[in-house]
Length: 166
Image 1 (cartoon, one colour):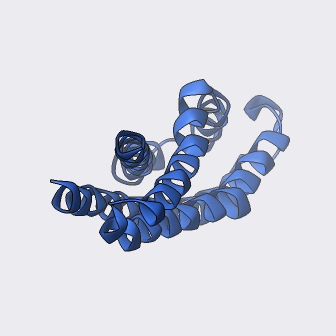
Image 2: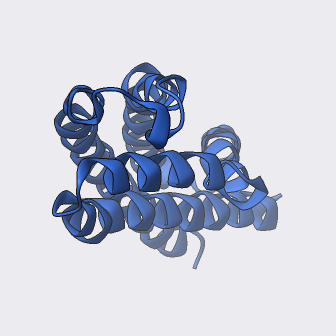
């Protein structure tokens, strides 16, 4: 059982790290790169990204991480890794902040951008971009910070597990 607990925690840690890296990369590389693009290029690029990112690898990390974290918490509660439980719970809570922000803010913005239609058929690209860009960027920074902090909490949980079982 201890091996399963450790593997679930490692999986949650890796998943949180991958998601933190993704959102951070958007914050410090992708969005600054497209900021200087004209409206048509910006809308087209973001529409393409929003379609491409919904794939099996993304969904595995995005949806699998909280499942593994919750299972890890249950196993820690019942086993020798109980000292890690507060860190696992903190990591899961921070990850869920990102999850809620994504579902409540970023996905609806992505959907609205898609609903605007093909960039060559949008009458006012500047308005479409304006309704999307600044809000999406601000909330993406929240996602990046939350998942990075969650990743840190999961890392510290791994240290606590090592200390309690080693």
